[in-house]
Amino acid sequence: MTRMRPGMLLAGLLLVCGTAAIAGPLAVDTLDGDPTTVPDGLAAGPKLLVIAFSKAARKQTDDWNAHLAALCKSGTPGCYDVAVVEGMPSFVMDMAIGRMRDKVPPPERAHHLLAMKGTEDWKQLAATPAAPGDDAYLVLLGADGAVRWRAQGSWSASAEAGLQNALKAH
Image (cartoon, rainbow, N blue to C red; front, side, top):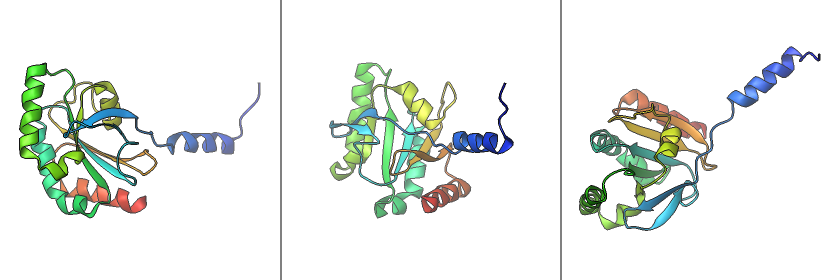
């Protein structure tokens, strides 16, 4: 039996622990109805995904979006609001999407994404529990599509500071 040297074991552990998960590709439609994928079909550079798995989570995602408005207007990162709507009855989904279109001005609709399939993949990307509940989930992807930062729940100054630090680091 061969023995691994302690330095090799440590190097192997660092390699495994230091590897960030790569997102996607996850199929979505923009609020305009254009199909695309996350992350490849989105603008180059880092991307911030603000994800809701339920209607009730919209309160938290709206609050996050309000606090991050200046950052998102800067263009770095590219900010995207994601509504995971898979599993909704079609008549409810159609009404919900219609309401979203009424609220979102046409120039902003390319940054509002509808995930109509792949809920389990979205849960994995956001690192949610089995039932994500009514929390907002935020995921910062690097330009390479690797997950750089995650948060869950209501906006807080400390969570936003974590996002700012992650943006500075990459």
